[in-house]
Length: 197
Ligand SMILES: [Zn+2]
Image 1 (spheres, rainbow, N blue to C red):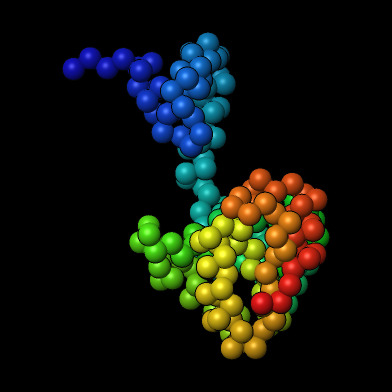
Image 2: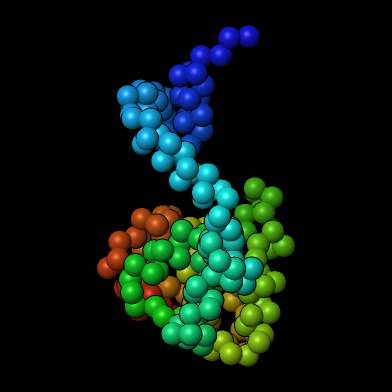
């Protein structure tokens, strides 16, 4: 069977999030015209991500060293812990430069309709970290979506009996959106305006 390399590239690019048929075609033609060196560099960067980047065994953030530098940095205080849905949400909080605590990435939200229950998330690890006793406040920074809210409520119920302050970021972030889209200012306000649950 004959394979058309350009068509195969278009198909592969179309599997990327946010890339439709038109964009995929444009990217494919762009790559065709790109120098060999630039294509090699792009391929090498993609492979390096797959080969070297892993998940932190403590907080589940993406990292190339395990444990990650957020977990090992002595300048970060362990009294406050910020809980987010996905590794990319850590960046949204870091961009504010106002948070100097630790992180815990859930790797999703409770979403019964998609068959995702509490056991599918990194909740056990969160509870054992908090049960350690050094954490004083857990900031629940899950997305302001139905699933994010439900997950925050679920976690609050589990965390409060452990004797920690549990807070939820303020909803300056537009409801139904992802924290990734919150700008620095909005995210700072969301963290500052957090309220106890
Ligand atoms: Zn970590």
